[in-house]
Image (cartoon, rainbow, N blue to C red; front, top):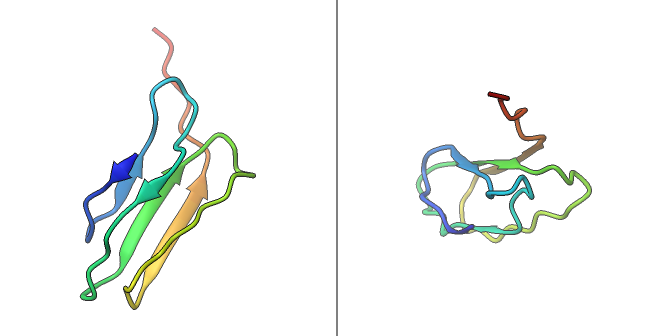
Length: 68
């Protein structure tokens, strides 16, 4: 978690399969920000603060882990 790059789609995940606890991003005023938020707990809350005109946050399950 922590600060993530802005202006491009961001994929955030956390080791251990626990999903992401929090994602923060300082959004510039010149374009949309898309955060694709991997979380195994879709009941969790996503809070965002932004000065951007357009912001999108997606909640979807993380892809299955490939088995060796």
